[in-house]
Image (tube, rainbow, N blue to C red; front, side):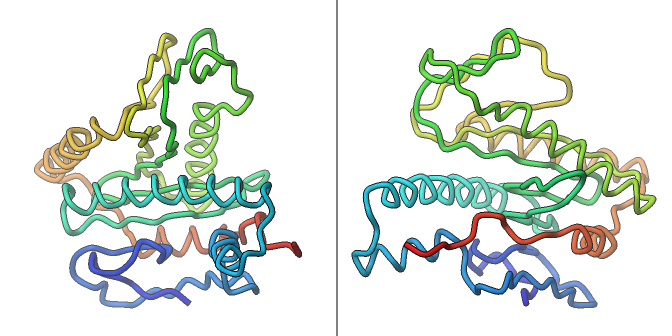
Amino acid sequence: NVRLFSRKFDINANYIYRGLILEEVIEMNIDDGLGCSLLDFYREMDLRGALDSEKQAELYRLERGAAGEKLVVDYLEEFGPDDWLTLTNLWLYEYGLFEVDCLLLTETAIYVFEIKNYNGDFKYANSQCYFSDDVIGHNPISQIQRCKVNLQNILLQADMRVPVHALLVFTGDHADIDIQDYIEDLTVLTINQLRKRIYSIAEDEQIKRGRGEHRLNHDKILRVLERGKRPSPYQPKPL
């Protein structure tokens, strides 16, 4: 089970509450029956020298992904208010499994993050994604849009009409992005642009609170997400 954490705890917790502890501690059972993630499993096997070249490449990919996600959460902790709530690596079900890399709950809205630790040039043109001028089959823009719609549907089924916004963040040191198509309600940015975006989110929250807008019920949202949560499909397999 997972407890509520303050900012001093590690990102590996599935969610981190930065600020005063909620009056009622909400426990979310994240034990998938294996007791460790695929990344943790590969790390342990690597220490034992038990990974072949294919698994070594997979470990490298997972390490880069985890590093990118941690960097984004570090930015949210450093530059965001203490009362924001951050969830990571959340697998949910809505007409199929989907993963949310990072979910931010402010007092007035929810922000869904898709995080890519790419180094190189990313271009989106004519509804096609390119990385270093090569067409890529995996479309992170479609992925984050699907996450947003699915999350909205899950909340609507619980009679919760909550503003949900989507962000695609490239965390590589040398990432460059070129978005040539119009994308509705999606912010695409590099890690160097994230700090200003966090400040903008915090400012927007203050404006809405100043207008007396209804504050989100974090307790209820967490319970709804708990009901929709599923184990990761990427589980350790015999080597």
